[in-house]
Length: 497
Image (cartoon, rainbow, N blue to C red; front, side, top):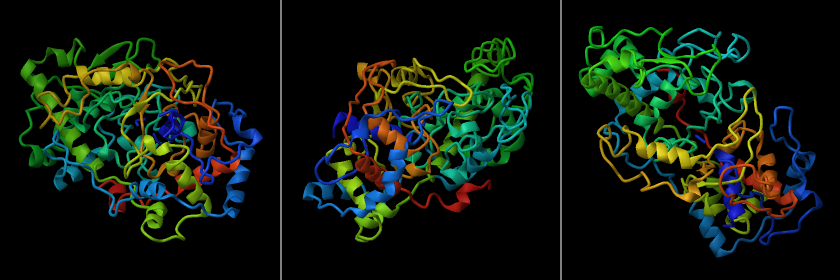
């Protein structure tokens, strides 16, 4: 696929998390004509969000009046490769001995829905109104479901503006959908975690997410879930022995900011995590290891649950399996462009339509919601370096096996690069790019069609350039993407057990 083609779709899906991908908009078997509006700037909202233009919106219905394309054998084979029957289950996870244990998955589901591990809300935008989680200073308000809403494809449809996420504080990236996350090895937009069991420390110990600590989480597990934990993982350490494990309250755990304002990275005191100079650091190395191991096992249970979350087969798959009426002519033209002239399939390949790699798509972040996005976000260059240095990574003692998923080194191409998201159920997401600054598929397609932010202003080297698509082609690609929706997970997985 063309570099630009790869990039548009990268941005579309996104987790953890990809700003510039390829053009997705199908036309005839050739590239088609270019209309005069194809390079115009997309309108933005007052928050900086990229919104649909009237040109993009009006072309969607008109495009379906045109005939379906004729596919070459190569194009048809490429499309068939995207839709095996059945869709594959997540691959084995040697890092997690409980990855496919039903009891661990059921326990992980309970953990996913509980807010009892969270510390204080730090941001004043948590004001008890609208979709806020409570009032600033309140504890026990943030769960995994707060930013991964089960009924909405495990995307964040709760945070104000549905762009970047508001937990204890404002994050800097859009929370990605968790559908089909069990297929990923390097997690998050930047690959900074290489397993579910170490990823869990991110939200628990982030001042912007749950504002908590591993010591508090372990103690809460002992108090509320000891029986379930021990039935799966064996005996817990005596976390009620305060001589060995200093008691932490929800009011004290996590970050206490210097000036009372919510920081992205704690700028004040921390309690309950390594480097706190207090409760955690005062414990013996053996007890520190025991606490960490409890939380590692929570991550393994959460991983077992998340491996069950899938988008499932949709209209596109039905078409590939013989139902020619399952998708519109517009979607068929978009599919042809996807595997043909636009070259999207070069990065969005396989059953999940993702190569699971990292690409620089040249997006200049804008102000969204109530927080500035990091305009110097180096993406995988920093994330992968963090994963390689993490004592909890899959090459270390907390992993049940090492399958070599970590790269040997960070490369120049990782500068400003973000992970290619899956395109399954992409139309369900409320916003796009790792910044959440595009509020629909049409503006994303238009963004990549005009070559993205051609003047630069982001780390690294962009893989995008103008495509010269017409409005009808852009609409066709959107129509194709909409056929990738599936039924989603078993409804029993969408509620607290």
